[in-house]
Image (tube, rainbow, N blue to C red; front, top):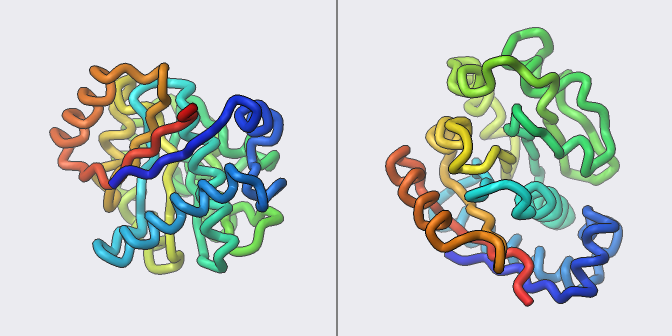
Length: 223
């Protein structure tokens, strides 16, 4: 399945200024495009019952965090209960996008310092819960591969209609392969004129090797 975001240059300037455009301007053309992504994910969930998805990209700065944040908002606006987890324990950004604290988050839950119910952040968007990364650990991959992470995902899966996990880029660290193996599938974000075909193909191979199903591709910044 291919999920497309079509963006003109003027619209791109807006999205840079207001990253959460589905919240700040829900009637915009870009917000409508996120509703298309929302619809495609909904069909995907109906067909395969995939409600726990990792979102990644081949490399850095390809827009995946902004896209996952806006997708989460768009789905929550449809009155579906959504959990957005920042699984990028090396360079987290979800707390910055939503302008919330990152003092407590995923790493605190995994290290058993804070229970999940106390670590989630209730933002000002109905039906959307955030689990930010928390403090950056020394061993991100080991923490994500822990039994505690498996237990956490098993615990939250029945509590939400959709869980989206932001992860590091596929080709840079092993974290995404670990996360992908724990989830129902992966959505890959690629950026036109930036993501090289070879990198996209290599990402697909890496995910296949990790036995992580690639369930969708979002092409960002199509002119």
